Length: 239
Image (cartoon, rainbow, N blue to C red; front, top):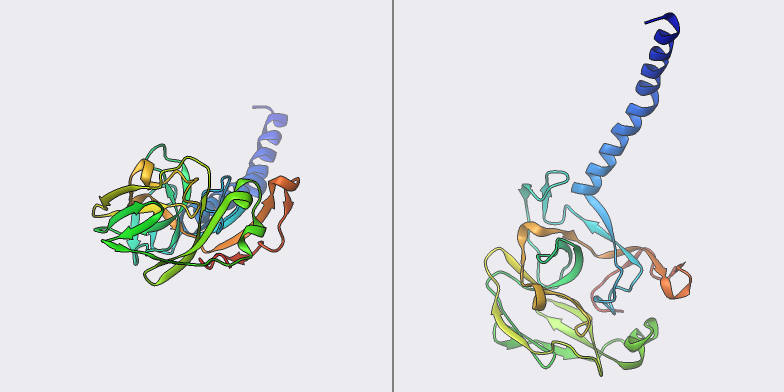
């Protein structure tokens, strides 16, 4: 190698050590954090309305239940399990897509739906009037034909909705949730692809829990930010 070639080689090595290698290390660290500790998830559909809107980007706490090996679903340690009413991010049993739904049935539960009435372990869930402000946050058929209520799961209440005039699976089950699995449903009961269609979700496919909106963009309004939803809590009631 001539002197000029050696010079280029030295420059390349220095560039690698000073510029490229630190950036790669930083990228690996950040990706590992997103994979194992905390992440965000974009919500492109209205299946969790009125709690979560299209364009919401929700924070995902991946340490809510366990610690996983980065970039895998292998558990290193586990300290908790999803509770009924939690909003969780998980991989769909149908195609592996990351979805956001609410935990309705726990392992061993019997879940049934009769004309939109949720029944858990033979006990009908109570419903009450929803916050009257909810329809004003929505648009399209949800605003015009939406029917809203507060669903009172044991130890947890949250807003749900139905949509008059659309074909939907309003009666389902009963089914028993297998050990190590969870029954998921969207709060928008007439417009949600959930466990009624793809079955229960295995525990190791649950990524984490979400309880807040990081950023919200309104796709009906040129993707402008919804500042009132940014950094807001998903308190479960729809209020």
